[in-house]
Amino acid sequence: MTFSSPFPEVDIPTASVYDYLFSGLSDPDDPVLDRVALIDAKSGRQTTYREMVARIDSFAGALAARGVGVGDVVGLLAPNSSAFAVAFHGILRAGATATTINALFTAKDIAKQLTDSRARTLITVTPLLAQAREGAALAGLSDEDVIVLDGPGRDGSGDGAGHPNAADILAPGTPAPQVNFAPSSHLAVLPYSSGTTGNPKGVMLTHRNLVANVAQIRPLHGMEPDDVVLAVLPFFHIYGMTVLLNAALHARARLVIMPSFDLGDFLGNIAEHRCTIAFIAPPVAVALAKHPLVDDHDLSSLQVVMSGAAPLDADLGHAVAKRLDCKVVQGYGMSELSPVSHITPFDGGRLNMHDDAPLASVGWTVSNAASKLVDPETGAEIEIPDEGLSKTGELWFKGPNVMAGYLNNEEATKETIDEDGWLHTGDLAQIDDRGLVYIVDRLKELIKYKGYQVPPAELEAVLLSHPDIADAAVVGVRDEEGEEVPKAFVVTQANSELTETDVIEFVAGQVAPYKKVRKVEFIDAIPKSASGKILRKDLRTG
Image 1 (tube, helix red, strand yellow):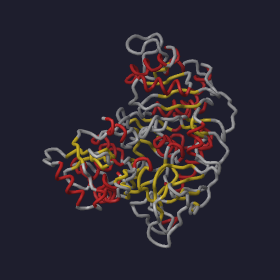
Image 2 (tube, helix red, strand yellow):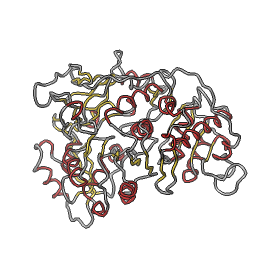
Image 3 (cartoon, one colour):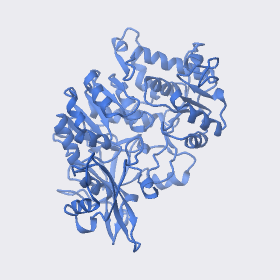
Image 4 (cartoon, helix red, strand yellow):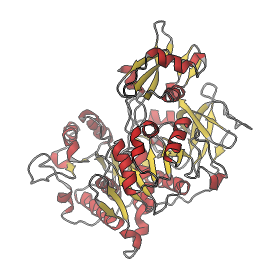
């Protein structure tokens, strides 16, 4: 049974990302222009909206002068910074397509993405230059094709010399070009799926996709110009790109930008800058709930913590809400959906839905869209229950934020988006009588034990409730008889004396017998993607 969004329809203009975000700042006397848009947390450097838009225009002009424009792809390999924001929007303003690259990638990974996307230019920073230079060379790019934003430039000396830097390309002062393209079909960005269960694929997202998703989530976030948003989730990932960077700039809010996650810096920045909103992934929630360092900081300015990228256990979310004395909500999405498809409003749903969504839920379907649950074995649509939760089914979604497809991979596109336009998420979910969606687990990650289905996320939530467990992940492995069984990978708290038997007995006391953890391995850290998803394939092959 199809269930449409309960939220009011929103207007989705036919506009480029640049025009949608910044065309309202055309009046030079607009006081908003002198508001701070970006703060680089490490250096304290501030950039106003006026300065940011001028730099974006200049960057677009510089790219155009180098022959980069509509139809070209530009790689962007950098951690979060104001320079990233300018370069990213400069690429889009020039009419080119940005393929954002994971800052943790090796040279071989970088080369693979540059080659697959057919990027003609790579933009990076000096801390990543070694792998950037090697990856670019493997992909056939010359030194002139690699721009090192903070490097010494063509005529400088030292590391990065010979590569143009920001000053080199901006020096001519070329104005931003006039570009023409159809926002509904022209690719704005080409991120690559996280590859937690297989090889990453290029996700083709148009200007309309990105504009639509900001339009869909902005009224529900309720973000205001006075909000101060902590930006630690990577901008190169679609979650940080849309939900943080684009949505916050559209709201004219202030972004406090962190290049990477460090708990002390995270807490210190909230306290120093009086941040009102923080977007996180579940691993950060674990630290906020359990780490003693939290008590050393004044976090009273924080009003909302939104979790995404992976399911947040309700008990963990409640622990964070209680400790920080703020609202904790979660949403759901994927790169292929630009990324948000389901959301809990910042107020929990009181304004629109007249009630708070349970924290276990990822919220309601976003505006201008519809969802349904489908039995993965029979193909039958699952009905919305009169009360309680429905049967479990694969979550399907349809809306203007659905990707154009996978780059050069028609087969994978057809497997993911059917002829009626429904995107098959590959995630198992339930729905309640109010239309709230609850994510159970990845369809491909379910553990099949003696005919029973065991969701790893359920066992991970149980494990994380143990006071001696700092982090955990569960995967299916084969036992001596060839049966798939749940195996827990556990990171213990400092000075813990937890044993394998302790872990097995703890979980067994809280789940059905067929869901019991049957093997345990203690490790130093759970491998995760930059967005916070557990890399189960690494655990299986490690």
